[in-house]
Amino acid sequence: MYFPSWLSQLYRGLSRPIRRTTQPIWGSLYRSLLQSSQRRIPEFSSFVVRTNTCGELRSSHLGQEVTLCGWIQYRRQNTFLVLRDFDGLVQVIIPQDESAASVKKILCEAPVESVVQVSGTVISRPAGQENPKMPTGEIEIKVKTAELLNACKKLPFEIKNFVKKTEALRLQYRYLDLRSFQMQYNLRLRSQMVMKMREYLCNLHGFVDIETPTLFKRTPGGAKEFLVPSREPGKFYSLPQSPQQFKQLLMVGGLDRYFQVARCYRDEGSRPDRQPEFTQIDIEMSFVDQTGIQSLIEGLLQYSWPNDKDPVVVPFPTMTFAEVLATYGTDKPDTRFGMKIIDISDVFRNTEIGFLQDALSKPHGTVKAICIPEGACSLLGKLRLECADLLETRGVVLRDPTLFSFLWVVDFPLFLPKEENPRELESAHHPFTAPHPSDIHLLYTEPKKARSQHYDLVLNGNEIGGGSIRIHNAELQRYILATLLKEDVKMLSHLLQALDYGAPPHGGIALGLDRLICLVTGSPSIRDVIAFPKSFRGHDLMSNTPDSVPPEELKPYHIRVSKPTDSKAERAH
Image 1 (spheres, rainbow, N blue to C red):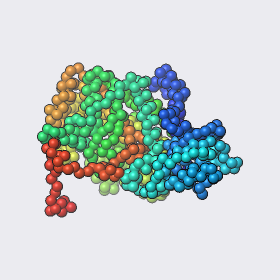
Image 2 (cartoon, rainbow, N blue to C red; image 1 turned 30 degrees about the vertical axis):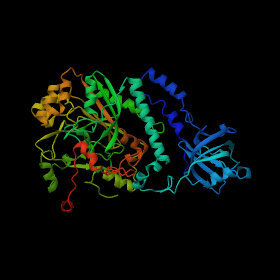
Image 3 (cartoon, helix red, strand yellow; image 1 turned 135 degrees about the horizontal axis):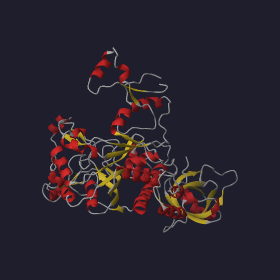
Image 4 (cartoon, rainbow, N blue to C red; image 1 turned 60 degrees about the horizontal axis):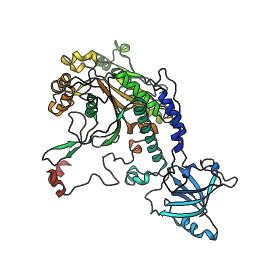
């Protein structure tokens, strides 16, 4: 498989026009930026010793003297080699005449994946030897000088797409894995989409890019947070699982529109689909409602969407939490295929079948079915997605990998019963989510029935974003924290105090950037769209992190590590 020249297409293509919608998402400012961005193509060879990239050379460069730098991808019979850089591949002819013996020696003896610099002339390939599969396949480089910049030792694996590598090996030698075409494509596409998001938010809609602190304090409820010791005995910082409190405080401070590519941290243990540190597109706005946030995000994705995918069509469909559970059995349904869950209770009201009568006689008891077109065997009773997996293994195409099906899910419950104590409540989203305007009275009578102003964005069965309209009234926020959730309000005294000083109505959302890019690129794991990810156990296999710390380095933090005794360790196992 050849390394295509795709990078310049990325830069050109991300500015393509989008499908017309009933309401314009942006105006004349977008058009002027679009026109200017189409004129500007990045200069990849500025400030460096090369004159061109390997992937950009074409027949239009014939006769030009060029200097290229890159890695030796392949060499054949000491007559030619293929040179690779981030932009693509080019064929280099190894000189055979005596006068160029030193150049031949360098290019013939350098191991594969060594870094070299070559200078020479762009010439046409001999007739019949052109390679139409290679973007530079009409030309080659007649080398005049060569320099070995760094020789490569024996590799733990070949840098080729078709060579199978275990994920553990890829993570251990991540700096080598990053040389692969797929990783280069994923990370550069990610960079381009983030840049377009910045452009849309900051340049077109007046958002302010603000960095918020990484060292903060523990937040009640939600996911577990990483603790960072301080030099004060018994006191710790906490790495925030999101900038939630800070972005609300920015609205109190009158910043009006905040945006950040935010680093977030969650200590969730071994989760194959999660990372202990991750990135989200974090957004908050003042004087906004749920519809405004949804329109903003639809326009943001439409504007930043890659050109090699089908255009994003807005508005996205919306379903309530109750509807998606009844129809799909999950709050993040994959809507690329049907097989909806259908309530057939009325058909069996008068049935004599015992287990069906028993089910229908219970409170909220129903009988439901899944319709499977052309089904080979009985799959009733299995989960909808398991049905889809089974059918697709048998050749039934249900989920088109090129289709991107967005869905807004709204009207979530405000509270859920705690797993460890169902009589107590916990926030379904987080404790700062505002109740649905129609359900505020239920907070004081039947809080379990109250809906929230929480909304999730789902793409192909994956939650890629979540947000809410926030509580901006200090009294209501205090009541929910102290009375309903039984939380210590002292931990949030700074936020409650801020809400008392003229906090505007506000709301926001966070998009999971890693998950979004994973879906856009069709990668099997979010680790394939992060430069240096952790393993599913939260370890960095390249640097052997986490690592132990000498006792003397822990003394300033008043920490002593007590290791389990052998007997305790045996009992633990």
